[in-house]
Image (cartoon, rainbow, N blue to C red; front, side, top):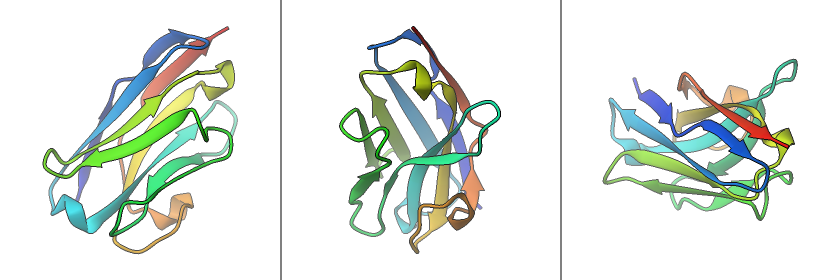
Amino acid sequence: QVQLVESGGGLVQAGGSLRLSCAASGRTFSNYRTAWFRQAPGKEREFVSGLSWPVNIPYYADSVKGRFTISRDNSKNTVYLQMNSLKPEDTAVYYCAAAYRGRGNGATDYEYWGQGTQVTVSS
């Protein structure tokens, strides 16, 4: 089992920045690939960004490419999502997800989920 706890969400004006953190516990974190998803009201959960396993190559949804940066620190069992140039359409609950090795960026490709953190971007 892997437990994930997100933090860092909040209210920010358009053009601002936030950094989300996802602290993991329970298993050898380096054996797990990680990703960020988001879900806006009335919409399906969508992939935002992920890191491949085992070499941690980042990849992004087109909607956030060039604005968001994903990273991880295995010594701290933590994954980060730096979000810059935020737009109102980035408003959503952001979820951290993890899966044992493997690959894929669909929600069903991930076994473990955090509780989510709200990000609200005002215009």
